[in-house]
Every structure is written in C-alpha cells, then in structure tokens.
Image 1 (spheres, helix red, strand yellow):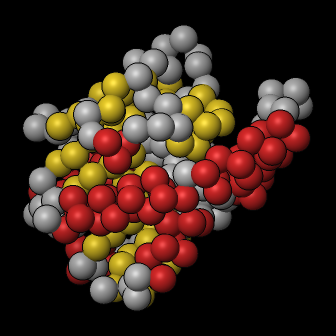
Image 2 (tube, one colour):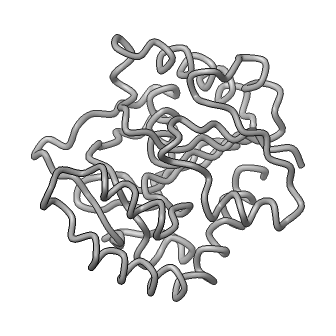
Image 3 (spheres, helix red, strand yellow):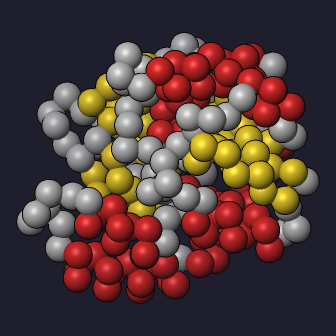
Length: 218
C-alpha cells in the first residue's frame, strides 16, 4: 500500500514505525508538513502525520499549520484512513472540533512513560513521550488512554491518534534531548534507559504498529 507520511519537522521522522511499515511491504511517500498539498492529503490510501516542536495553535506565526488543519478536517470528515502521532494527533483533534493547549501547570513530559489509564492491552506499558500540550478530544472521539490529565490515545471513524511517540528510536530521543535547555535532561541516563527499553519493547512496539494500521483501515 502507498502511505503518505507527513513529516511536520525533520527532527521528528518516521523512525522505527517507518522501518516497520517498509518491512511489511508498504511504499512510503514522505512530504514535509509545510509542503503537503490537499490533493496528496485526500488521495492517499493512508496518511500518517508525525510530530513537530510547533503547536497546532501557532497558525498565526506558521500559516502552514492552519492550511494543514483544513486539509485534515476534510480527510477526517470523509473518514479516510489516518494515523496521528503527537503533533499529528493534536492536529487531528483540532481539525475534528477538539482543542489543544499548553499544559495548564507547565508540565512537559520527556522520557519513557506509561499511561495511568489504558483501555486496550496494546497501549499498556511505557512509551517514548515528548510533549507539553494537552488534547481536548473532539466530539465523537473514543479516548483509549489518558495520563496525568492528558489524552494519550483516541480514535475517530477511520482514524487513530497517539500523543506519545512509538516511532522514536534512542537516537531520535537523544537528538530531542540535545535541543533541550541545559540540565533539563540527563542525556546519558536517558540514552542508557532508551537502548534497554527500545529492545525490551520491540514486540509490544510492533503489536502497537499493527493495531494502529488495523484500526485506521477498518
């Protein structure tokens, strides 16, 4: 299957999810979030939208965000298969009538973190997380996971979104850590933990990928 992968930042590539999709025989078409066209967004059999250091509420400063939201709203209304990760999940929420804002207490989640509430086994356990925004799910969404006041997974007809980063490799997370303010992240400890958990969670990660694909296409 041809899959349109919307990279909303070069710092947040498709990573391990992309590797898995290619190993399953899928063809990935990579496009920048600022360059994706409406034709691409509507015509693709499946769209995967990735992360960004930007917020979906920053459209005034970054016009491509509002342009993308209109495209995503049209795709979701048509119930076309869509997967969102972090910024991609936030974009889906905003496009479908929900909202996204900074955590009211200024909390920013970094590292491997589990969810307090996980309605499905494929969401259980710790996952890479790197966000400071909170999703208010759109009307009609089914919330499957929550943690610390933030939605971590929700579904819409033909679509599923996760706030965490199942695609992130230890190298990707270390790059994010390198962009953080000095002293915010212990990079050595995070790298060691990440390498261990990335291997330990391989089966869980691949089961999650399979479930994301199944739910988007069902």
